Figure 1 (cartoon, rainbow, N blue to C red):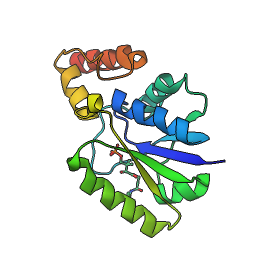
Figure 2 (figure 1 turned 45 degrees about the vertical axis):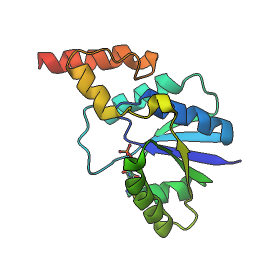
Figure 3 (figure 1 turned 135 degrees about the horizontal axis):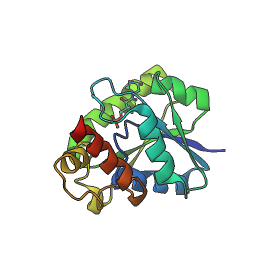
Length: 163
Ligand code: PNS
């Protein structure tokens, strides 16, 4: 059984993430989408909210499951006996950071291979932080995130506005 891990912050999941997850699901027997911690980021959504949105967005893909892990990705790969880490690559700006992470993960666990899938041209510009900015300022995010999670995000911003 070939297992792939799709790790990320998913704050929130975008159509770009979902495209990578769907394509990984055609390449591997089982795909585990895992909410992990990026210590460089401050999150808008709680871990539970990010998980719930991932579950909603991937509900129709039978070989995808959603998980969370608070430790090192290199350790998680071992724990799950995964064949590869799958990451999406947008533009050159992603490359240096992703390259550094892939090398560090392989140093920590020589069996931790990273496979990069290039984004589709449509999703090239998309990022979770842009989605949050557009949503916070009342813009239309329906083209940017899976339809199943749009109400969830709008509700979150309503709450933030009232606070
Ligand atoms: O969506 P992001 O924020 O780019 O995802 C980055 C993430 C969460 C995959 C990365 O920060 C990570 O792997 N975190 C887990 C802790 C870890 O292993 N850190 C060292 C990475 S080399």
